[in-house]
Length: 342
Ligand code: NAI
Image (cartoon, rainbow, N blue to C red; front, side, top):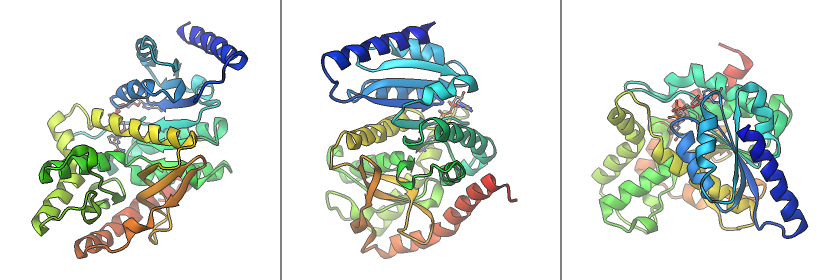
């Protein structure tokens, strides 16, 4: 089978590198939900990374073709495909980073929370397998509602006795990518220079771009702050409506997720200057999970960037207080799901 020939080629390659030269960087990445709208372009972008030696693609169907297709790209990583429950364990063995975009996306008129019933169960079962097969891996959760699916993952990992809060991440990179793009456009800045931290969570008003902390330093009128904040918060819905029933953001999401994977691998590889915003277990507020800028290291979250969280504007202070009840409820909904309380 395709999968077997990949494996044997990978084994040969490993033997060669063991005998002759140790590869500079050789990390293993698994994508769960790899045949989906996000999964496919994400797999392509990860396939382009020089830091990846093995790319394991898992889905409940249609993943064999995706892997065969990608395997023809002449980049270093070996692509393998895994279909269905029985092959999940072998997909995960020895993996450094697991990315989870499995689940259903929004259609027009839906909130991310409307996805809860289906995606909560998918995330639970996938994270159980992660706990059993690669408990040390970084786990990147993309499946929505992220505000709840990350607490679900944490509870599962706790039940399995392998929870390391430093290695569980809700992927909010797309909010940062969007904020950077919209601010650069509005203020005529060079895109490459712009960096806007986005904190809170990943749904509606829980997404809080800290425009006052934009780099390079730039001033906004009150109207601009309001307009940009609302656009960043609703950017996902903008895409859902434009796709008119065909799904939600996939390409920009794949781009953002690939950036977060690459940042994680750079951190693994010893780069001491890797910062990303992510939704993680946190002591920044009274809420147990909160997105803010973190420093990534070999062991995961190394530190929270405190300077982002000081000197809020009045607008940001108010928005922060306003988002807390919704975020709190989403966290509790996730925790209760695992413990089967109503
Ligand atoms: P999609 O429907 O195109 O793909 C989802 C894939 O997951 C499908 O290939 C499906 O077969 C697979 N899948 C379903 N159950 C599975 C299971 N038990 N194990 C493995 N794979 C399974 O959806 P799309 O557009 O790729 O979105 C995926 C998720 O990402 C959605 O929940 C969506 O809301 C979320 N999302 C998150 C964003 C973020 O910023 N964190 C942004 C955009 C979407």
